[in-house]
Image 1 (tube, chains in turn orange, yellow):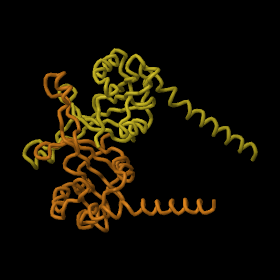
Image 2 (cartoon, chains in turn brown, yellow; image 1 turned 45 degrees about the vertical axis):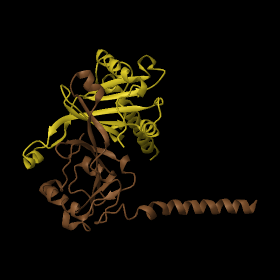
Image 3 (spheres, chains in turn purple, yellow; image 1 turned 180 degrees about the vertical axis):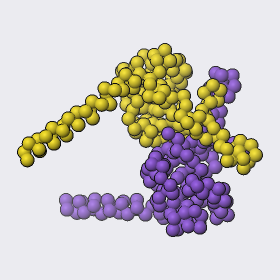
Image 4 (cartoon, chains in turn purple, green; image 1 turned 90 degrees about the vertical axis):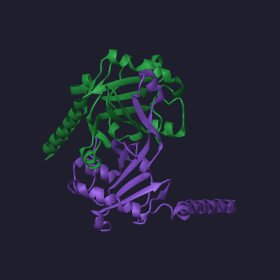
Length: 173
Length: 173
């Protein structure tokens, strides 16, 4: 009996070690952008900041989510955002809903289709990312970070919003 | 000293009673729809199901949020939704973002402006709402429920989606 108990404990420990190692071993190279930004675990569970639609080449419908630090700062109207803030931008294909188009005789509803244009993050660390307004920018396409050249294109646009701490999105009440 | 302590306790109890009564006394009539659906507390903190844009008279951009029961059922692909599911539809004015329109020379980004078209809820209770597919529908405009006639217009449209348990929105991954 003692041996069985020991074996079960050993298996449990081994399983724990494997579970702990698994996410870092296989995907470490894929999930870290050149500036060190990683995909934050559980971001799809974060609360909603706002929604938007982009026309043109992007042609997507998107949601901006924030971690707890972000949501608190938004609701308190606190600027600049404190270190630890992370803002996520998810986007999906901008698809006319067939059923309502049929019912209305013209496109009426546009809904989110499959994911599109990757997932983007803004991570606030005023020391680490001092040269880009205190924010680290990253985009991941199917879990793979966009290259350094692409990331360099983020800040020049965000820089115009210095009075809003470089953040485009307002909180939607 | 004993009397002071007693008075403080009495004040604390009274304050507790007032705090308990306050939300039901003043707003009871405003916050309950004719079918019994109320505004669920904390719904703005719920997780995101999907996003959409409505054209025509509605002309809004919207987010569909779900309580924990809803999110679990969506992610597990469970149909019908279990009792206790609540789906919330928030909507905002569909506003072109001035800054990006200026930068692109044409409308590029459409963002959420002020709240618009009220807040809607679908509450699953297969017994209470058996006559409308197990869902109670409600809309609140500035906290005030829409009248019974308006609520009657919900089910005839949702009825066409019986194979999806009367729910329009798919989960956006």
